[in-house]
Image 1: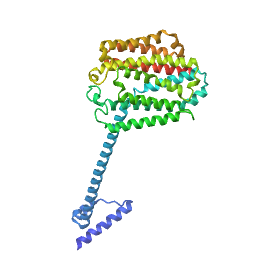
Image 2: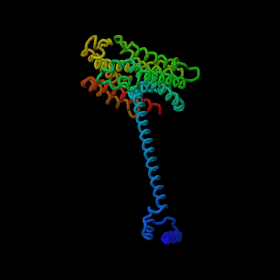
Image 3: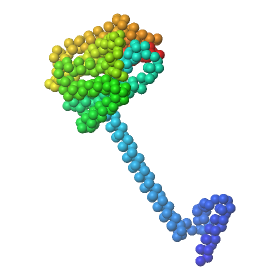
Image 4: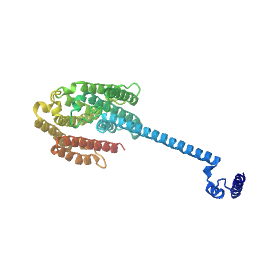
Length: 379
């Protein structure tokens, strides 16, 4: 009727006014006041209100789905991150740096002693890096193998229950596959680091992996074999350094002598550390392994371990041979000895667990000093 015509008239007027002002939106509340009726009472109003409600509901559903997806992604990322960390922990990523450090010392001794030019040393950098990755992966595989072999002992050890396999964070099957994958990758990198027709370094890598597997499978339970094998594995990278590029047979007597003397200080240090670890594990090793502390007692074993450390430090301090070998400007080696030797002394008075960890840190300090000194010589 008249009211409807009146209402549509005002709608047309309002739209025209808004068009003149350059805007296509118009205020529904003003229209409601003009028409004296609520907008939702009209058929058009009910349709618009319904559409708005549906839109809000649709947006709410979209937000809900988006929230669920984000939560699932976050959970997946956390799970992947935790799983990756569990596998990396099996490798002992910090501990195995020691093997790479020994290799770098050996290789740099060979290069600096053979009067190699800076350009030839730079050319070797890619092979040295590739070989370092190979060694890192192979020693990581050895650590993971040991976790698989010692799962029963570690599961009851107060300080080792958190290990990935012992805590069942990683299944035995997956841990074994991880060991195989690391070993294969290590061998691939070892071949990549060697020149064509030079198989010395890959053969050494395969031999090392075999030693690690035999150690994990049972040789570590034989009296003193564990300590001797760990001592060998500590200095084995020096052998690898001499075999890289197939030049082992061409090493001069002076270079070979330097490598032997480095082995003579590296071997007893690692044996000493393994004895201290055996003392720490004496309760859980009883009945499963035959270690030095179980045979001669903890006190005598500790005395032997720190006697070996004292002999090594005394040799490094008093022998002019090592001061000459690592002479550089600035004298970084002297600085590492000044720091590393007191760390060894301090380790002997600390509680057993802290002492063997301090001894490990002192080895890192000495290795860093040697590597830096040799790099200064190569400049």
